[in-house]
Amino acid sequence: MSVIKTDIDLSNFFGEFIYDCYRTGVEFINIHPDYALLKFRDILSNLVVSIADQSKVEISTQRLFDQIDYLHDCQIISWSLKGRLHEARKLVSSAYSGEREHSYRSNVNTFFLNALPTGVCTPGVHVQSIS
Image (cartoon, rainbow, N blue to C red):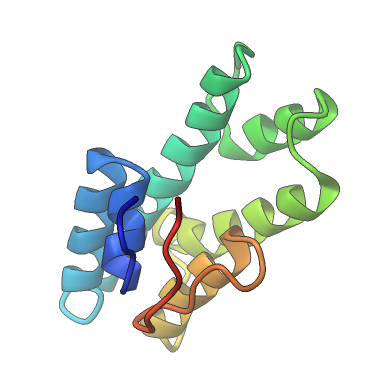
């Protein structure tokens, strides 16, 4: 059992790719916010593909929107998680569409708070261990 004390520790729980993307995103959030959002989108995309792989479902589309809907249609994710993933997708997709939010730090926090089940983690705050 590993102890998770911070949002960085939590990202490491999901694997090296997500850990590296999250650390990079946090590092660049104030320097180059669009790049940071791209890294957070990479995390979201990786999570969706991982869910499909673990469920042994093949996703034929490259569009993240369609991938999320497909996982829900196959009853792999709940309606609630589908909504959270779409909200996170909208937040991180602003880097692709050129839209800019006033607070990129707020986007990062909202991304993780919406993507994870309630009570799992508040970014930057100590959290419980996951066994």
